[in-house]
Image (cartoon, rainbow over all chains, first blue to last red; front, side, top):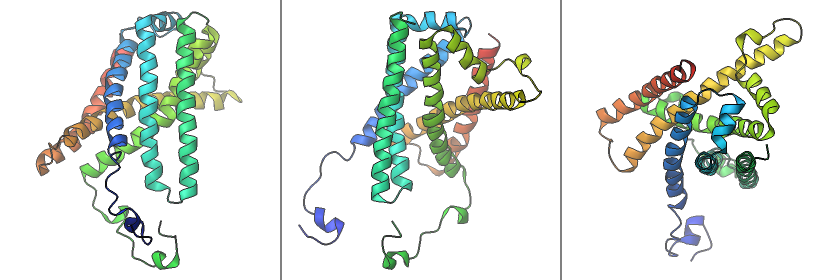
Length: 127
Length: 151
């Protein structure tokens, strides 16, 4: 293992076997988004109207609430992976990239947690 | 990367966006990124606002609908209300734009799935689907709004 260039420092270490992980999870969540958002789009069309009564009654049902929770997790995860690639493509300073990825993780997990909590609150009848 | 030190700053940069002749493949590629980022920022934001309003009760939900999908007849065009009315029209366009973004990202995403499997790289076929995906997306967006508004 050399000490010079970045390629020299890793040459000969072999693969870490994590290379395809980000790519694969982006595809897994993409299939999840495909199914769940199509369900969401179909539900919006099939609801009698989009007023508070009809929507809250629909989203309080166990199946719809669980699907919405899954939709939130899948879309936020997918968005987090996609925005990571955006940051990696356009932000070239190591420190800034670290800061942006930190904020991205906070925003994705925080936003997802808020969405899930809202669905649970509605479904369990506190609203 | 290129300003890490002077020696690297002097190296030639690869030709950038503006010197290439635009093709449908480039359009569908950048559309995938733009619509994905739009959905990530604005789409998930609106989704959370909607869910938060639902969880907060009828009044908060009415407030959400009043901003995102205001009644045309309720818009006022005098005094300071003009700013609010203009913003409400912008938000309508944002919501329509988000639905278009979703269907565009969906179609170009499906195109990516096919190419991930190693298929669809023949020049004519690849060109065909890079033109077809954004067009199919516009048709799906129109169908969605027609079904939604005229049910």
